[in-house]
Image (cartoon, rainbow, N blue to C red; front, top):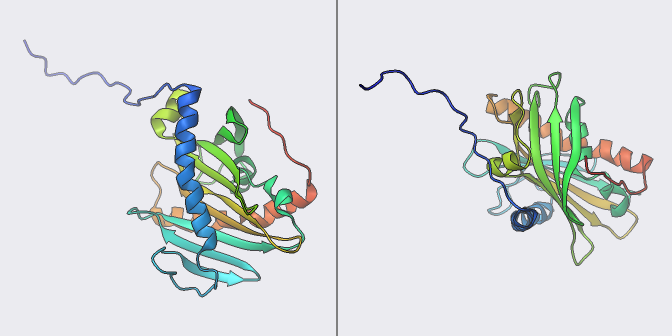
Length: 251
């Protein structure tokens, strides 16, 4: 006799268990695209015209006191990528790059960052990081967590690039299961480009594309994302206060 009762609920979250070697190959491949996106973002609209430059889609929203903020629609979604560019004088690329990383940037996103740690080193310049925000964080980050890769590369001309993005959700779940009360957000192709200038100064480009997941009005997310790109000034002050290289430990 056929039962009319509903099937018992089950957890539909899938996870992939991958070896360090497979994870390293994936992150290296994915980060190549991220690096190229960051370099492209750092080079476009250098005339500060405020107009869309060709077909790259960047639109300058504001330019004041050497600071530029731009946005570009992120693919076919209604979210936007945001870019900030600052000319920092009397700061070397090596000095700024000590704080241009996923953890120090996240500390500026919201003060209620309850966990920020490197959970796996895949190579000398390739790491996996967990960022977790608590219940008292702003709505955009409340109970959110992010599992991201971070890759650092120095280009032939000395330009420093830090590429940061979330792992695919299945891969992240296999590496670090999500807590029941948390929401796993996505940090899409984001990061830093630090260019050395002739004097002891540098041009900083910061790109952020954040999907916090869970229900939030997209206009709210986009509006808050514009604030995220303004963190360079705080990190600049951190770099001046702590000029030595920052080491990290596996948690």
